[in-house]
Image 1 (cartoon, helix red, strand yellow):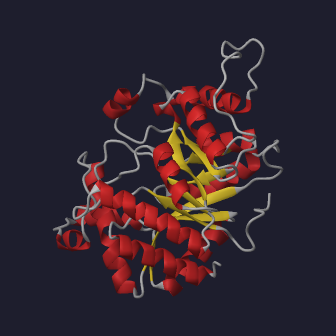
Image 2 (tube, one colour):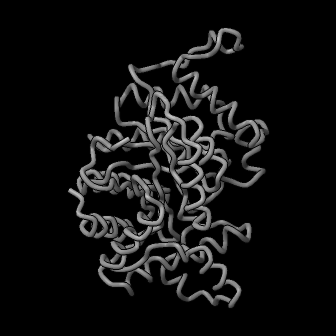
Image 3 (spheres, helix red, strand yellow):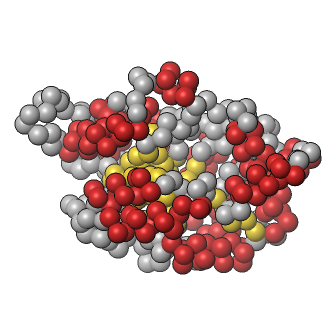
Length: 338
């Protein structure tokens, strides 16, 4: 598959609507709206929002709601979920939500599906009945059947319809951070998006597994893979490192079971890290692409070369809305986007 809209490697945006210790959820969501408009003007290809729950520093807990809002604020930008965590939802609910989005905004909606709950076990239990990752293939099959109206004659849901249904379904992607979803995406002939930004050690093996497992389908005649990277770009390396500093402290708090608001750069730089904490941060952020435009251009070129990605998606987890938009502007200029 060759992306029909792209004359060069497509570049897209992953957003979690970060809420900083000096901002509010309303400000964060307004920042996402402003960023989506800017991304459209800068020539980014897609704009996806990620589903997380129980995390005060992330405001994108309801992707379908946020996508509907962003679609009204833009005109041509593809919008989607990066992703909807299927264990948290009945497949029919997802089919109805995204069928409605596609009917409202034909040809602009992507449905990225993940198999992790995106939260802690107790919150996952509060969201929906207990499920197992082993249920994921069956529930994915249900979702695709609801969207396509193609249940077998002997299926108990054969008479159930997802309404509304447009002339076409949203584009379905599988998301992953290991080989499981890579292999499943290949077997189903679906496009695949890999979370390099928090699972860098698995990126290349997952890409290889996806391509070796790929079977042509009605959706794709050959593999199409997107890789998501954490990127912070500024006019200088020093400023980019300053803006990126909160990501490390945020991860420390999350992994200690105490997720909170995204710290300010000042908070992150003043924190008294132990050697063990610095090592843990380096392990998580070592794959991040942080620096001035030349450094970021080189980092993204290296990532694309190593993964042979058909598309790159970048996530800039910075709570200052002006600095975040500036980062995407600099990357767009460095990458030669329209």
